Length: 73
Image (tube, rainbow, N blue to C red; front, side):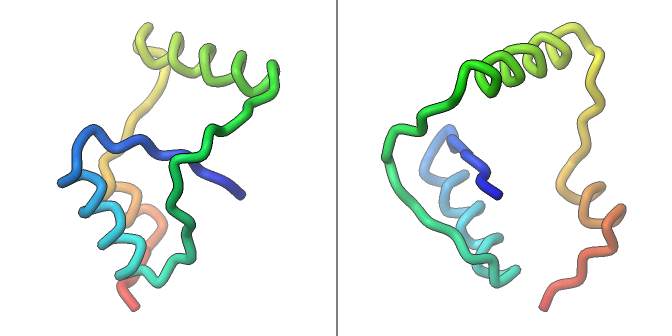
């Protein structure tokens, strides 16, 4: 599985990396361009449209951690 994250500033990047490290996740940092297929691009645009139209549900990180019963290692 791959996840692309674009933090808005250095503080967000540092917080995200600290979280990954605390959860002992393996990750790769890089600035390489990611090539998405046309289907992937369309899916992202559709999800953005749904979010902007209020058709998507959002959750805070704490809600996700609680829902999945994630415990710190």
